[in-house]
Image (cartoon, rainbow, N blue to C red; front, side, top):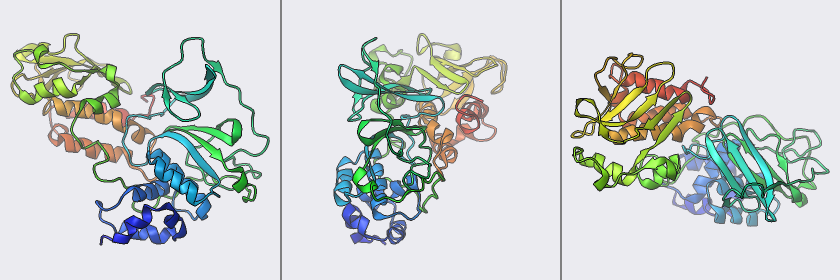
Length: 424
């Protein structure tokens, strides 16, 4: 069933707000996975974040506006606001991980903070987290900004609101449903607030005109009931299953943390063409960490190693011998040596670890990409299962029971599948 009229309906937020949500949801669930557009993305994302509980069209418009902003569909968000001027709040900007998206950033799991400053007359927001580089934003627009020069940023004092806070649980506050995890916002001038949780940061603005007659009773802090079907993304818009590219690795590890070796700088002994292409075009992460384990490239990447192999780098596995990683120059196969046998057969011999260097990079990238979804999943989101399925698709043989390197990957993957954000 393609329901050709449904895409046109969903892509018009005014039509969406006029229709029964349950009826739309049933029609969406009947669609093939490859059928739909921006409207289907926004509708399913709104319900994935806020749940399937009943809401007035005005409040649902706020949910749609948030979802569209998070997904980067700013034009759709503007059309939502135009279609429902009585929405109780709108999203000014958001740096947020959508439900069902496996992205390395933002990952604000664990210790995190958001602080407001002023530099050169411009209000700025600094976001700091354990697993995310310090990031600065223009507070008004959400545009990324370079860190201000030292000693030029001053704390930006804002007045607390005289009345109730948006999404406050107090009985005098408005009866609204906020995203799971929104607590203790930073109040700003003009009825704006900064909300921060493990999935990201958002600046939202209350609509005083709409809220003047809004029922009170406090915000609903109960977790949302996920809608059947979950979020949907247009085919081809995600990059988790796509080829490894320079832009993709830069986005996960940071441009300065990826090494690329032009063909002229690669050792002549390396004859495996796919490996040579990977090194020159996509690159290798210089450093990788997850929990109490880490990986670092060798000081001389692809220098001569044992048994005619080329040295890639070394795992710090915690409380045991390091794991030295090598690549075979002719086949591209990746192996490891860990003498004490804590992970693998032990001894001085190199044992098979993973099919090739591309799969090795994909495993490391996969851990970084899925960290947030594993440590802080949304209600109904199966981050760990999604991660393990994705890694199985990379090289199932390396993870199979009894495979020489299976214990190594089990140890490394446990940093996000079994251990918490602090490595415990």
